[in-house]
Length: 267
Image 1 (cartoon, one colour):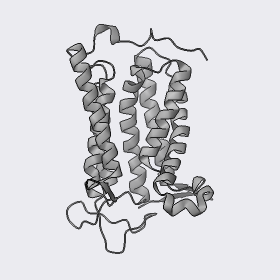
Image 2: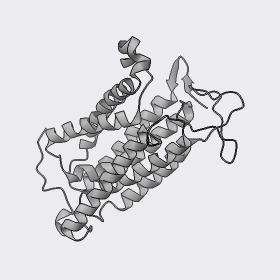
Image 3: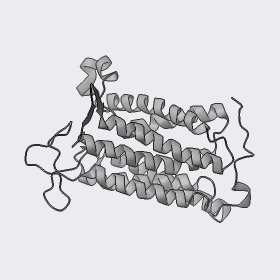
Image 4: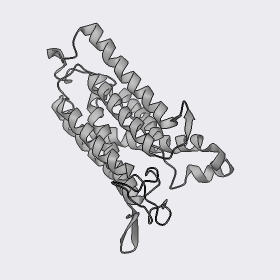
């Protein structure tokens, strides 16, 4: 494990570096896609900044709410702590940040959702590299067979001699694959379908990975993350069914090949 990297007097947390890299990669993908659909590529910087601020706030608040009994005696300290961030809280907060930005830019539409789909998948994959390098406790249940790995030097170390499922590695590989697939399909479907596919694929990945992790079951023998993942999967499937029934096809029509005619607010 490499929780920290020292550069002279400066010490950098690998989780933080991966977190930043995730936004850079996501922004790069959004930048390319904006240019392809006839929108200013530089909007990517604004969008990523909005997602970053919203994501940090959302991840912190979700952690506080989800772990209230453990942090209630020092709420202020935990709000400004350097630890305690959750993915779903970050995703929700980031989404709200982007929605507010899109409303300001008058770009709150299905184009926005579809261009975000591969960027979200890639950003998540890169972020999980930070979890792997830092050993922050996102690894799986004890396991001593094939692919087993220990995190004795992690920020949340495994006990001496104990090995576990290296779930961050699995998530990075799977979600990078999802990102590539979504990018390849970016011009094939009617607007909104790409994002629906992202919901299904990302939800399925997290739902299955949870069986290898140590999170506590909250209902029906499932963890909170699994219930949230099921919600994403259901929304994605219903979305596709509704579009298919309404239009008779999922293929993209000729009038959805460019977003250049979508009104935009000038800076």
